[in-house]
Image (cartoon, rainbow, N blue to C red):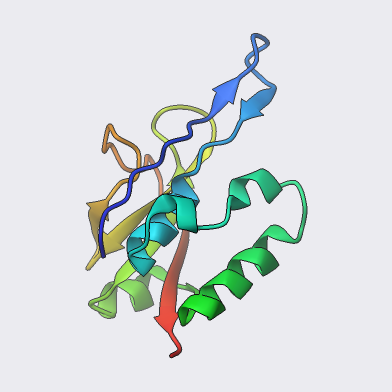
Length: 129
């Protein structure tokens, strides 16, 4: 795992509700785990309103020799591998994703490094080639 930091951050319109820019913490986590520069990962954050974003990501990962796997906290912690944890961001009312290993924060792609305020989902990349 080579830490890669996000370079896009959630921004809201003046109404405080309308999201005008999405962050790219998820592509930064993928880049970290695949060990490629952020600009080589598809800009999936721009596709979140379309169901196809996941297919785009999975096709790209397969090309790189990985599959995207959804798991449980217990399985991930027991794996002794890096895995992603998503949940509530400590910086606002939106989700964030970080990288853990053995139940401990290993890398937060946000520069402030504060991690998550709650853990919800657990995912990992499995090498297939």
